[in-house]
Image (cartoon, rainbow, N blue to C red; front, side, top):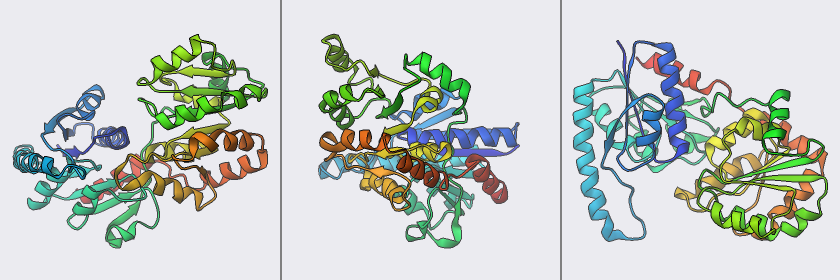
Length: 365
């Protein structure tokens, strides 16, 4: 029986690929044993068991760049995590350790390497994370989603596989019809979908609020506005006061992304690696507003990689409240430019990423 450790997390961008890889491992080796290792207080501790896998938490935490004194506690947690990770490797005896980025993958892959166990890293972003850069020298294989990653990793270890995406996303005529009903939309109007992650994005919300008058005048356009659970109460208040135009559909969270993608002509989104992989596979026209609150500003680098290939439009977080909807309303009425962006983003799509990553795992074990 083969044994696999999958480690990392912290955000959905790390957790989703990890679960996709585990699902494909289970598909390939049905009697295998898979153990996840995450950070004790992060979202993987809920998401992974919900997907049907066992997880152990480490007390690891991120380095605090603003408050140096806090890093005494961070160092203590790291030492504790290293010790616990060594114990997990010793007890579980995996055939391979797979790291997807995030705090927890550091101690686990280090402990595995020290025991001579092969390790595989999956890097989702176009700008490599600190943990993955540290682990690269000892890693057996590094699976990446973007070209040109040899500036971060040893060239001979890199395999371009793309990021595993949600398997249930399907754009179809049937989903389009269901989507118009689900969101209560007019099939004769063009649709903009604005998503800011499950909790929402303050800048995107400010941008649409400042553009209410412009959107109200655009008779042939409608917007699905996913404001996020964090902001929903305040936005609902605006709706109750009659301030939100009738051609905007407000929701806190989009549970049926397959419907949302199927009805959308244009998407406004943050520039997380997982989202970009989905947009590429589905051939969507997108305006990316990178979040400035991420490590090493990696979302701007993700977005720039698309802009360089004329595959997306990027607007900075600082300029979005003023410019975002001017650009969006102009773009949605320019079918020629929309079509060109769709064709170019499709060329960047990486298909069957989970299967290709597991092919590399199979070679190592």
